[in-house]
Length: 331
Image (cartoon, helix red, strand yellow):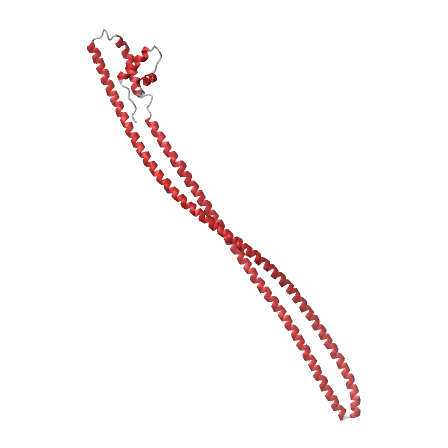
């Protein structure tokens, strides 16, 4: 918007009125009396009025033609000066309007960028929400696996206790079996020794009788010997069967212990696999948290960039244009 330009007649009239009041006055008082105008126009007119004041006092004795020529010269001079001022004012107005148009385009571009930033912000918010859901699901799965791991560890501890008890029972059974075998062997040897002794006594006795009875006693002795041999073989066979049975039980106990050890190893491998899975879950959760923090920082930096840097640059541009359009005191 162009400023009001003071005319020489208005300025001279204002100066006459202020001078007639017999009070101190300055260019601001003249500007208020005129109703506007720039100091670049008012100051030269005030100076001209001061120089023409003595001439005006002598106007009654000065020829009219000379006064008319002076007035025409002043009017022509100030008309040219005011025309130059108007031209400069029009040029400033054009620059101002061009600057306003440029600023409007920049503000439209900034608004478009803000809309795009809002859309990107919405996408980032949705991504953050999805990551939060993924993290929550991972935590729930991890808690379930931790509970399953605790359950398996409890079962493993129970199996370990059972294996230790069975190993102790197996060792005790093997030791008891060895003692029983030794006792049975000693008993068998003792029985065999006593039987042999008794048999020898009977043989001596029968030999005495056989020597008296001759062939008949000798046959009877052979029959008794065969019978005793058969019984001895039978006892030996039964002892061997009992020993084999004890050895079979010992072998079964060892196989059972090996089976429990294999099951314990399988459970330990399963526990190790669950621990490895837990570490993977922790790694996945750490990556998800890192991604969430990165997205959050990106969103904050993007928001700060749009809200502070670009609007500060626009504000600085508007202030610079306003400074350029302000009238200078020394014009």
